[in-house]
View 1 (cartoon, one colour):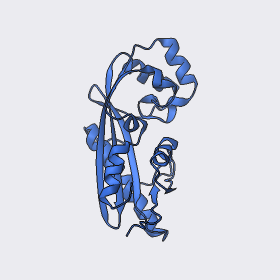
View 2 (cartoon, one colour):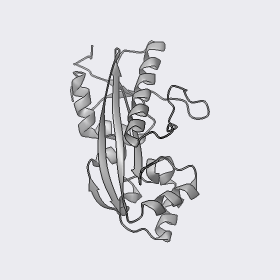
View 3 (spheres, one colour):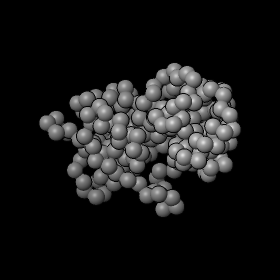
Length: 206
C-alpha cells in the first residue's frame, strides 16, 4: 500500500537526467544502484539478443531493471515502495544503437545520424508487491547535417559517452536536432506522460 500522505518510490537508475525529470514533476524518490560492469547483476543483461527488435529489447531491459530493483528492496528489507526503472535505445536503419564504446565509436554513430531521422524508444516499468507494468514512448528525431568539426568538438566534451545514440538532447547536442516528433523527455530518458500514467495505475499521486 502506497503512503498517500508521503508517497515515495525507488528509482533504479544512475541517470542524473531521470532524477531531474522526476524532481520536475514533484515525485519524491530514493535511489537504487546496480553494480557496474564487469560485476553487474546477471538479471539485468543489457546485451541485445540475436535478432531482437528494438521495442522488445528496450521493454525487456526496463522490466528487468524494475524486477531487480524490487528484488533488492525485498532482500535488503527496505521500506516497501514502488520501483521505477527505464531504458532508452535508438533504432536507425533497423539496428539498435546503444551507448558508444569509445570516442571513435561516438564519432561513427554521429556521422551515421547526420542529416537523417532516427527513432528513440524509452520504456518505463514499475514493480510493486508482485505486480509489474510498463509503457513505451516512441519519438522520431531528425538531425541536421553535421560537419566533421562539429562532431569532433562535441565528442571532445565527453557528453556522448554515457548516452544511447552518443548524444544528449538536453545538452550541447540540442543544436543538432532539426525536428522532433514525440516526447522530448522520452528522448532525454524518462517520458513524463507515460511515467505519470504508469504511476497512477499504482494509485501513486502525480
